[in-house]
Length: 308
Image (cartoon, rainbow, N blue to C red; front, top):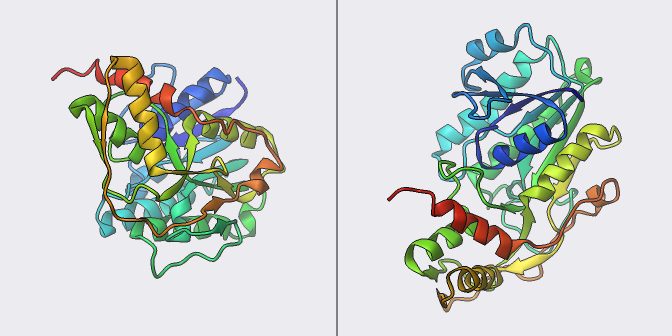
């Protein structure tokens, strides 16, 4: 084994991809969560990050080389839940680990810490807290707590990866990720044979394939020079209409018939978005190629396995 890794959120959307990549790379993986992991090669530690006492009991005699903190309440949760899980939960996890501090703590953050994004976004861009969502604010607060730990944690390398819009077929259909743009468009195409865009079609996004996220995480574990905050995206903007067109193209190729795209007439207000990932790309290489159509087809294949 290459090392012991503790992951929170390993049964989730991003976690499903990350766990598999860790196993493939030869790591010993333990998932900490409210339920056991379905993969028999993953050790399960049952505890909720919002329960400080249960968390401390579970981790009191444990040591891990690396901690990957992915567990989070998503943007659909209410503000109280987001604060409890994303901020207090992160604090609870760190407190529970303070006796046997890991060599590396990687936190999966988000582009939403910057608030409404426009223009060029670097790690030095000042977050717009006034226009930010409670989700974005909670992730920023958790980041600050991790990176501001006292000197006793100086031997722990701390990394925060600010992800842009991730995409990729869920590892199983039970994953609660169908609200995300790419998955939502693909699911709508499969279920209704049409796409209904609710956002302005010219809205620009940075999209990053989950396979690329896994590449970065694996390289971050082995590269001791990676520390602090990094933007993690493709570095290339794409409009929502282009994503919809990719879904439509995959639909036609897979089902042999055309897909209707219904777009609102309103025009977006995000112009020239550049999610600058140069800081990360100067230290590690990773795949930024778009895999939209192939991942749409994988989602279609997954959805065909779901019983009505």
